[in-house]
Amino acid sequence: MARVILKDIKKIYPMSGDQKKKKAKGKKTEHKTGNLQITDKGVVAVQAFNLDIADKEFIVLVGPSGCGKSTTLRMIAGLEDISEGDLYIDDELMNGVAPKDRDIAMVFQNYALYPHMSVYDNMAFSLKLKHMDKKEIDVKVREAAEILGITEYLDRKPKALSGGQRQRVAIGRAIVRNPKVFLMDEPLSNLDAKLRNQMRAEILKLRQKINTTFIYVTHDQTEAMTLGDRIVIMKDGYIQQIGTPQQVFDHPANLFVAGFIGSPQMNMMDGRLIKKDGKYAVELPGTTVVLSEEKQARLAANDVAEQEVIVGVRPEHVILTDSGYRGTVEVSELMGSSMHVHLTDVHGKDMVVILNDKKDFDKFTTGAQIDLTFTPDVVHVFDRTTQKNLEW
Image: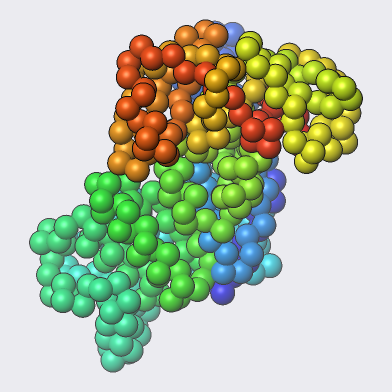
């Protein structure tokens, strides 16, 4: 299979002729780029991207719309030119290699099936272009159809299939090629919630059966957390953090990652990091929490000084108490086995608390007062200026 290495990859989209004229006249360009950097060469969509993907690893690129994840995938596929940097697949430089010669297969968001062809012919098409023997084509198509559970649909046209079935066909068309690398660009985003859950499980099963290198793009953090061996979180063209799903959940590198990973998202509060009897603690209105020994060691190793900070606590880590950080119930959502309680007026902030003890559910009606605190091992402390996690 394949190891994929991206070294200092950058993608710059050149300015249009009108934009260049405006720039030459000293006028501000009207092109909206959000927070992306604009240089004399153009708009930088992907910036200083470095990633080493091991053979047979499942990597997920995740981030909000416009962060550069799909552009990165298209550069790996050869559908976008690489402005700067190098791409290697199995130690072979791929920058100037045509897409058809990279031995990759790509599954698109919109399936990209030929409507006039049957499922069988859609899956066999790329093999026919290679002038492969008909019997070999038939074996490969039927093996892929069996893996994906679409054998009974081989004679149908795409219009006669559901969204989930069409996506299976698109994946099957990629499988028959037996590529070194599978690229998937938001393949589940057009499916409803139930089908997305089913197809996530199908992709995990598929990965076990074919055991090749996967690079998967999504804006859905649930997909990223459930599918990836490692996930790459992106924002504004930059990598924010790379790690296993558990690593980025437990140890977010900065405020953006902390808010992006986890649902409901992490609660953020203004606080102060202090030293109390030689130990680090976070001071909040109504409560002070001395941090765990593990966090003490990391903060001490970084020689972190007392300062104003942003304190982060996940909704599932909030603990009810008799006295502490007080808030007012605004609304509660019963989720079956748990309840999501939305609090307001928590010293000027809104918060979400996840409760799992059913005997507490009836207590939290609108307007009720709640006192809460947090255990020392689940509090995250972020620099107010840089927004970086002070432990790392």
